[in-house]
Image (cartoon, rainbow, N blue to C red; front, side):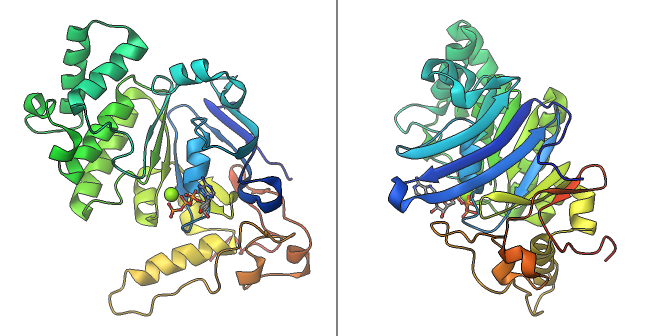
Length: 330
Ligand SMILES: Nc1ncnc2c1ncn2[C@@H]1O[C@H](COP(=O)(O)OP(=O)(O)OP(=O)(O)O)[C@@H](O)[C@H]1O
Ligand SMILES: [Mg+2]
């Protein structure tokens, strides 16, 4: 059986999403047909090498695009298509129904206002509550994300905080209006390991309490295994594999996923030879006709260079785009 979208309706439904930059003659195709459905309360972890389109895809789910972006497809949040909305409706939805923790820690802040003010403004803009109520909520949020001396921290400017604290404020800001969907782009990469784990566990706890759905980008398979219900592996702007976390890690079907896992597992043994995937990621300005991974793939067969494989379903919810998948037992 072959199809591209999981059948059950989710809080977020993405279908046939394509994103390209530049003018038609020098167009770079970054997202090349992404389909998935995110269930209520689900945490989807996105993995993939640098440049595979993870951040661009995630920003697309908020309808955030720079100028000269060519976008097609659908991003439906609770049934409403974000890509078909006028700017005002979209602005109202951002922060309230869907919010994002950005990869670059400073992107979310305005350097000239205190962090407390930025949170209260967000709350007031979306919920229309009084200044006093907004301040009380901001304090609650700071306590929720475990910021010590929360009350006095509200009066800090972004540059007065450490990286770890700023990250927590960013999470507080993203959670300010209790979004239905939280998008998190490597929210902890810049931090040291102990702080990373603290923040991720906190995020998972908050997600459970609030029943939010989360799409979460990470470079770290260990982190994805810990936090995600399902894992999507991106290659050249598409999902190469999309599977429940356990299946993705124990029995990956796509050779690229297998390669990523091998690199991680071997990389953890100190002094060991680190297995890497041979070759380089494809040039997004000239994607091959067939599978974009074929030139680097040890399992490539003739069909792979002729036509892009469709998403194939193995078992109920395990999907991979591959003509010659890895065996189900490894
Ligand atoms: N505004 C833009 N104009 C042109 N190209 C862009 C633009 N934004 C991103 N790209 C290109 O799109 C590709 C994917 O970028 P993206 O930031 O999504 O990668 P990523 O998977 O998040 O990588 P990383 O793991 O390093 O964060 C890159 O080649 C990048 O240079
Ligand atoms: Mg990125």
